[in-house]
Length: 274
Ligand code: SAM
Image (cartoon, rainbow, N blue to C red; front, side):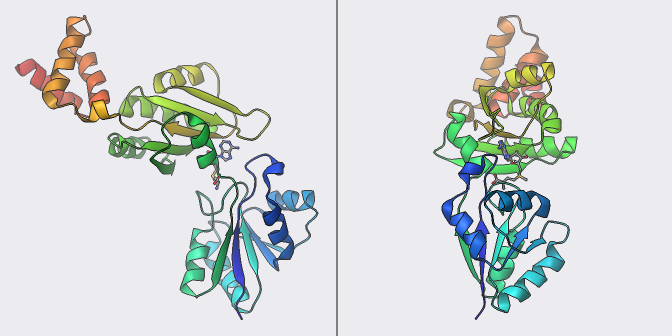
């Protein structure tokens, strides 16, 4: 009889978040597929678990995937773990689960923390409906194009980002999405855990002054209903109100474009035509 693949969630920082069932499962399986065996070795040591490991990551997933399937088919049980959090969520595992499904191999989940859901819970931003974007493409144009596609998304949007790319991403978000609410959840469950509930422009200012450190989840408010329901004519009226207050037309058109999702150029030229 074929074995089972156990998808095991591990802590995102604080080892006390390791579940009793996760420890038990890692004790009981025949082998562990780990994203980085050195990282998992420390986790196993902490819980006094001695178990053979094999490395399974995005660069060897094809070849190791077949090896793991063969071992499962021969009756061994395998646990897959990653460096932190839930496997398969911006982490290796998805392909292995799919392979198991294709081969009729049983899969079970041992749920653990995920940085995305933990950050959402603390965000103070609507949790009723949300989407997970994971990492944006670091390439400038591709990043902005994707943000343009997300601009009119009404649900809360969750992103992962590396500290050295954070400022660039915040700037792109502020430019494309406009000055919305954002919560930056940093180093969750660790000593320097911090939750910053602010706006995109203020977040840009903050990280222009000091370099971001640690791991971040960004929870960004979706487009608000008032903005979505604005007609083009109403957007032009907003520009008028801003220019009447002395704001230069190009800035007013840019701000209203951000707020409403209409194109800056169209707003600008139609305003001049009026
Ligand atoms: N599978 C993992 C999960 O479900 O939490 C996510 C893995 S992904 C490769 C790593 C990213 O998750 C980091 O770049 C960061 O955005 C986020 N992350 C992981 N641990 C975190 C923590 N303790 N605090 C904040 N963000 C974290």
